[in-house]
Structures are given as structure tokens and as C-alpha cells.
Length: 133
Image (cartoon, rainbow, N blue to C red; front, side):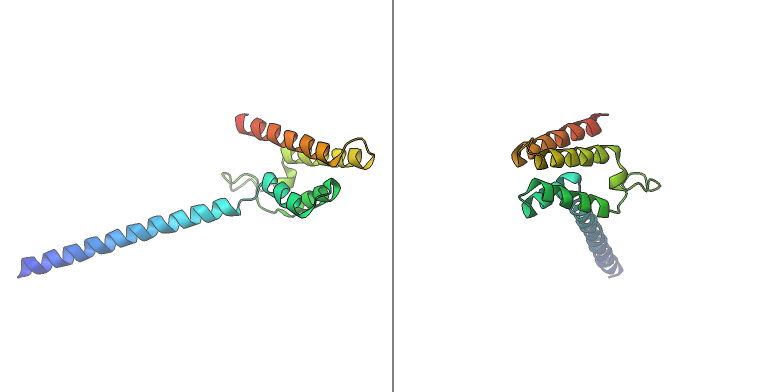
């Protein structure tokens, strides 16, 4: 009788331990997915602004505002690094190029499409540079 009670208790404890483990894994997965979805990048800002604005100059204004408002640190691995996205050297270069392209479009030297292409090419080059340096 005592042995049967002991086995029932052991099985119950084992089931509870499994449930705790499953809940912990599920919660970790949810947090990981949410963090990934919440992490905005210059590329995601650009895509959102391009959807809202067909005019290149207006898209750049939207992009600059979105980046300026981003208050999260650029280095998630170092909690002491509190630089904002707008202070990142690659982001500064990207924004300066966007402003230069805007001026060229306004002067009629480039079309909106040519400016978008030039900005996207810079974005890709900067991504490769940042990834492999």
C-alpha cells in the first residue's frame, strides 16, 4: 500500500516537473519571438516609410523621423552601450546619403526611382560591411 502511494506521488511530481519545463520553454520561445518582432531596423523603417510615401523626399523625411525617435540602444549585447540608432556611424552615413539624394531629386538630377535604387544599394553595402567587419 505504501509502495503504491509512493509511486503515485512520484508520477504526479514527474508530471508537474514536465509541465513546468514545457511552460518554461514555451515562455522563453514567446519572449524570443516577441523580441525579434519588436526589433526595428533601418530596413524595416525604410520599408514602412516607402509604403506610406510614394515621393522619395517624403519617404526620407519619414525615415529620418522614425530613426530619430528610436530610443533603444544599438548594441543589445552590451547593456552599458546606450548609443541610440541615430548615433551609429553606418546609420548616419545612410541618412546623409538619403539627404543628398533628396537634393538631387529636387534639382531634377535624379528620378525618384534612381534615388531609391542608390539608397537601397548603400543599405545593402552597409549591411555587408557591418556584418563582416
